[in-house]
Image 1 (cartoon, helix red, strand yellow):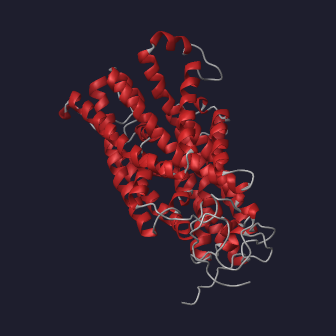
Image 2 (spheres, one colour):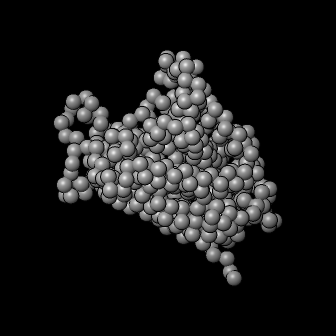
Image 3 (cartoon, helix red, strand yellow):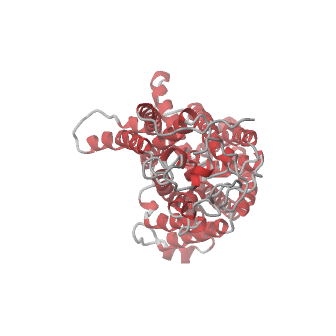
Length: 508
């Protein structure tokens, strides 16, 4: 077998440029092959993160931190500290895909094997389905408010009964969002890039207007930043709570962080990707966090109570212009985040399972249909559910992240044979054992089980009255537990029984 480092390909057609056999059709299609032209600038990456951050789910998650008993400055600190961690990890996961030009599920073939890569692909795709439903449901409430404002009697008649937990009007609003997102997605990656380039800044404008309006009504001198909804905590007692809040921020972004390679592959250079991440994560998120805290603080003197859900904030303003503008803005924000985080990921992930039978578009539509079947409105409705859900999802994602980073940076020394990612040749580098790297498989199990247990077991013990000790805070760290165990376990297994043999660096 020839030992050399395959240069990143720049073609969409599944045929390598050298004299080796063409890519195996069962492992590739137009969307999974190395990208033809890497043209995304730093602004495109920046706009991607703006779309990912500016969502109803982001507001609600940030607002739910007040329920932990933290003051506003502590919530702000937790948000910024958490996003700095996300920033570092996103740069790590971006490089292998940007260098090779392939999406997340394909780069995993270098670690899990050309068949084994379906394991992380299906897990990530399933998580995207859950998030797609959550984001669509949260934004559909914006449309519901608009319907109630302009057609109150008709809307009330459709909103007084529920079917499987949601009213007929709720289903109508969900369906409108569902179709709108599918329409944008169906037009392809270039149209998606243009949409997020516009949507991110547009949402920011409305966020600033909303915050300015509330502050002007309240008067800056009447705004207090002591917004703790839980028991007031002294500084010592607040430290572990702040650490939990930081961990929750990482869990919230763990999904797009894991498959960020799906977008980094289009970056014109790794430097451009890193610059976009810097602007889109620490810088952008700091401003977003300040707006979130200021807006939430202003609701207390204006409405007499703390409101952390922006949809409810807009509803309380009760003017036609505000409701229409706010409602449409949060619709746009949700379309943006759902497409970049929860449509594109399963599109690549499910297509990777059977490239010739499941196209990129078909993979995305699998997620869209699955989101309805999960009925997210029945389980994502309060702060406790938010924290519990984030912990469980983070537990599933953490191990996959740790294994990929260990495989690419430590075991493979940042070298990938691109052609070997697309062949079933038993002698090829990434065939391993029957197309699966057993070390990656066992590392996933060995790290995933404890991570999931850290979320489920403490709560189960309390619910069954088997203990009086409340250890549920462990679940906040499920992503870190899974990531660390995945990294360490995979490293240990590869050192004991090496499976990955990195390509040699080619002669200059």
